[in-house]
Length: 326
Image (cartoon, rainbow, N blue to C red; front, top):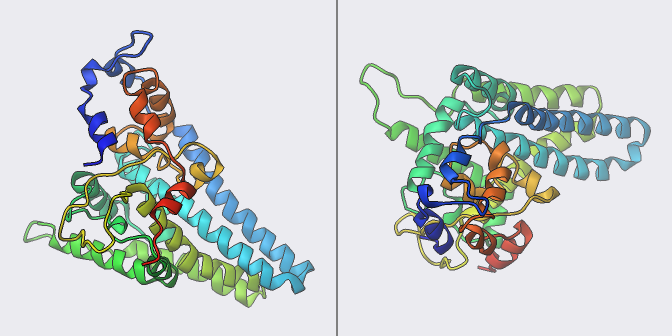
């Protein structure tokens, strides 16, 4: 297990005390979700998609000669924003979009799942198994099993990793025990159809209207850039700097690794919905990301301070440390 996380786990929660004398267990009771902030952040992502689409249309209309550059910029933005929005599905998996759990799931599928083709009820058990089996061959979210190489990046940009992820999720769902009278659920269900129709409709209508920067940019962004950021981000969160590239971590234990990525603009968007404070999330997975900053601030005034400080890094810094030629 990663040394910093092990030390944090070794700190008994009932013995953590701030310099002001506040017990952690007492402070934890105040860490309730801030739902207005959650929806501000989710809808900001949707607004960013709309504004990027409008920008693509306007540039195509008034500056058609800029189209090649417009497509490149829009593809990057659409992919990055899709990745940003999709991260809030994780928050929904922990029932933190709404106080009522059924409402939480309906909102997740409507505002996020319909866009990325996922069903929250199918994603949740897979994600909770990730918490349960992090660092072991049984982990269900394991991009970090592979080394960060040119091959990894190429697979992420060509859709190969998406196929691997979907195939693994389907395998997990089909292997889960269920009553004999109950039909096994599939990853490729209603939400995939809705997502396909929604995204396909945007592309087809844009093309028919002659807005090619929007049509092509959306397609490249969704199919290439979005999966690329998702795969690389998860690897940066969990891949150990001491992992051996020749080891097969689907057969031997990788060990738990989690990081803290700060709160800058990149960390807060590439690692939106609390992914930038991943160490804290895996320590207290039911606390809403809207309160992880408060949790971090509190712990920095306790005996856990040095553990958090030693574990702080950045996405670019981690990428540089983990990248290997082969």
